[in-house]
Image (cartoon, rainbow, N blue to C red; front, top):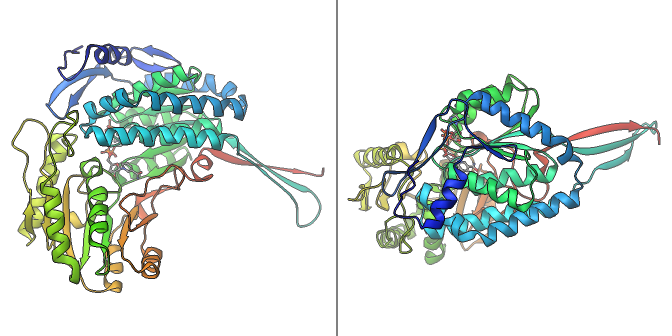
Amino acid sequence: MDLSNPNLTAEEQDRLSAITRGLYIGGDWLSSQKGQTIAVIDPATETIIVHVHDATPADGIRAVEAASTAAKRWRQTSPRDRSEILRRCFELMKARLEPLARLISLENGKALGDARSEVSYAAEFFRWNAEEAVRISGEFATAPSGANRIIVDYQPIGICLLITPWNFPAAMATRKIAPALAAGCTVVLKPASETPLTAYALAALFEEAGVPPGVVNVVTTSDPSSLTAAILADPRVRKLSFTGSTGVGRILLGEAAKHVISCSMELGGNAPFIVFDDADLNVALDGAMIAKMRNAGEACTAANRIYVQSGIYDAFAAGLAQRMSALTVGPGLDEATVCGPMITEKAVAKIDRLVEDARRKGAELLCGGARANRKGFYYLPTVLSHVPPNAEMAREEIFGPVAPLSRFEDEDEIIARANDTEYGLSAYVFTRDTVRGMRVAGQIEAGMVALNRGLVSDPAAPFGGVKQSGLGREGGQHHGIAEFMEAKYIATTI
Ligand code: NAP
């Protein structure tokens, strides 16, 4: 195993070897049955950081076995005890914010500032769900006929398979694990193969916080399709919670349908960002920088189509180009970096293809528009003006630091253009007229609308999409935890 990464301190190298000893199953670090490994690449240098174990479908079933063994005791643990364990997870994550942020930055490439924000956000799911765990309540009613009483009890749904993407390796995992554990479920987590280290580091941290063996299991694989098919075919598994692309979500919905497994799907986005003439220019520019450049554009909520009304268009375009070209691009672990590398060479090639396509179709380049001239998967912060509706980037997720601007004239026109997509995750609206803001927010087909702000994510709010952006919600009062529970109705005469 190559642990000689020059970006790491000796202590970090020790921690890395501790969390790459095997698959995390039943509280042990077990070797994969085929004995093979997956290389984890540093996107800033294109070098191998370390290798992790490569699980087979049989390893996946070992993880289900461990989750099943732990399930009986965990669901009977009192809500107060579960809550206190979750609270300790929150506190430990906050105490370990810096090493966790450095690990995220190392394997994902994101700037340390973004990684620190991610750890805080990820930890909040434990604090929030520690509070939710003790507030699960049922219902009690008299049947309309008067013949009996209706008692509804909410029970843990059972063993859950959680599949997460690489763009928020901590937060996408805790947004599922925390409510699942609060509800009394045990889980098998399959993190993205690009960013397995954060998942394993979290598993070790949860163990320290008192999560019993087998309640959380983590398996990494180079063959996600076979592993997840085997796990979903196991009748003990009752829930699939997936965050990732709409394409993979469709495949997994098909796989889960074979076994009639409950699904929660957090999928891709194509967020419109709408700036009306009467918007405060600086507020809109601040919002655009957050909505576009959080995580260097590698976010499902990223502003993917920026629509600006004619009267403010030129000032907005000039201001955005000025701010974007001033950003420091570099390795995520450098404190000065604001825009780190993309996750892979494939991601950079896709961004390049979308920019070239838009330019060929008439978009004007205001800044960037190329890879950075250095080793690593870098793309320069880019602003394109007058992006035509037939550009591929108006339909596909860019997932990079590229801001495509288009002009619009009136409200009805822009609502129709904003809704002209199969996606419906998030949207942004900037106007000083709050009545118009609420009217537009109401008509946009999206699960989440930010009004005069560039950020929607909050553990206390229901996160999720409509149309092909997903099914179900994560976080929020009752929404997130409800995905991991089932109603049990008891008819009684008492
Ligand atoms: P992805 O390619 O769909 O992968 C997501 C996860 O699914 C990874 O763990 C991946 O494993 C696994 N996977 C891939 N193919 C699979 C298959 N056939 N069967 C089972 N599992 C499979 O997505 P990504 O590139 O990691 O993440 C970016 C996407 O996620 C974007 O579309 C983004 O919008 C979306 N996203 C949505 C939200 C939300 O809350 N709505 C949040 C974050 C990201 P491997 O890594 O091994 O391929």
